[in-house]
Length: 282
Image (spheres, rainbow, N blue to C red):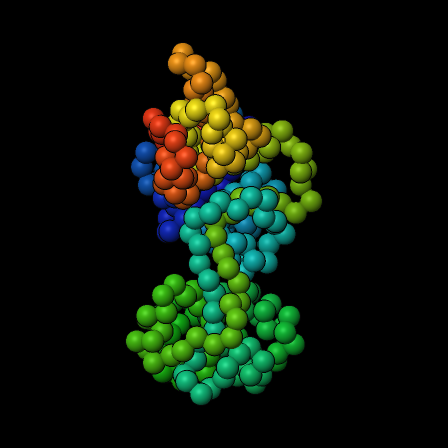
């Protein structure tokens, strides 16, 4: 039975549970449940603190887990990313008072406050910067005002909270994070149970990214239409009862669907429809 770690709370928990449900797996009904078994899929889920998941997986007690790339790197655990999941995206940046520094190269001899000591220490070392790192569990933007540090390193979305604290973002991003599937470093990459799990999640990712598009067009416009909707391998084309017309079906990127529909209409296609894809295997 495949043993999988899942975030039990925080920004990773809800989207992870939703993706697993879409992939056909049972999920817990109450937040108090710490473990459930899905016998039909031969999977056992363990609901753990997101920060601990990489450590549990690296121990070999659990086969794989879902956590953040930031938490994986910060943990220093012997685990590796095997599939990005596209949710819980975040960017890590340095920030300080205006005039203090312009980039990581200026941070030598300073103290940096952060909740992600492993990430920041690694980034500073990578750039050859000798700076101190102090660990705080939250609200790191107050560290400068209270004299604990000259610089902070934290997740930045809009930057509004930093500006409100009188701080400015400096330098290039430290890293970009998102939810990822992780496994123990050196684990069997071809484990069939793990591969099946990954295929299911990849199917969900594709289903969320694409829609199925159907339309009718005249034969003489088919090549132009197919150029707009090439599909993955090739679109499906079927003759209609009315001579000279064909029906076309193809997967298209969801974010481009409206533009493609407009372009198809302009070349004479009609009965243009899009439908959601709930699951797929490619």
